[in-house]
Image (cartoon, rainbow, N blue to C red; front, side):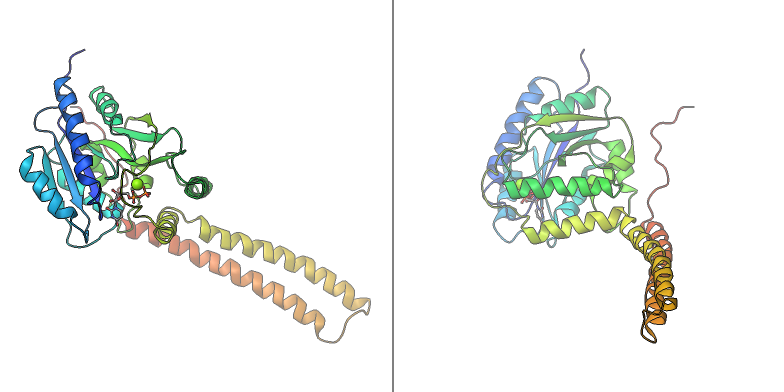
Length: 317
Ligand code: UDP
Ligand code: MG
């Protein structure tokens, strides 16, 4: 089957990545040549490096690459905005110029050859293709365990995420335009993209070591990333308060019965019964009240995010 070559943009967020960018660029360019030879992508396809306010020579390298190769573009953010925002900035900048865009980390941990398969799936009509790690052998035990517990926790909290998928994915221009409708400031793309719908597919790859440089996600950033993810997508923590409140009220009833029995069988000191009953009862009532207020705050929180209520995939007249 011979289909029209795809116009592809690759978006690469970079934060202090001077040690890897040149290598990343040459590997992507090599892949571009191959895909062009196979008529998979067209000659207007581009690689876009987004400099997320790096403090090293990252931007200098990007500008020299951009002047050397027609295929390479650069975007410089005015200051460090964080991985998710840098990625979003890149995707939103290219969405009206391309047929589809692939986001990939600068450090070559994600196998670039999976791009080939992603584009093939796109040309067969898939709108979103997730790159999923088939194993995590290259990660440290600590990173592997924390990442796994994170995915489990998110699932438990009712957030629909693709297991072992980071931000290595292909999105069609249509999907990117739908993504543009999400105005939330606390951006967690891995949670938002599955909300879009559309025809999706998966490509598996083995995740390698970082090519050079160090991880830009130290423990502190990992924790804040996880907290961001949970609080941007789930009102379950609020519900937990109500549940604890109801349990406390039930305990209050039990304690009241126990206390009254003790009192009337004469096993108590003066004042003990009234204090026991009120502590549990007031505690329970307070937690339930907090939970109720929390429900309203949860609603407000959903409202202020202004998420689109629906996304149209196709119209025919
Ligand atoms: N990154 C970014 N802004 C940041 C932190 C990271 O653009 O504030 C980029 C970074 O350059 C890399 C990608 O996000 O391309 C993923 O970061 P990293 O590889 O350090 O994360 P890890 O693979 O260790 O989770
Ligand atoms: Mg990495």
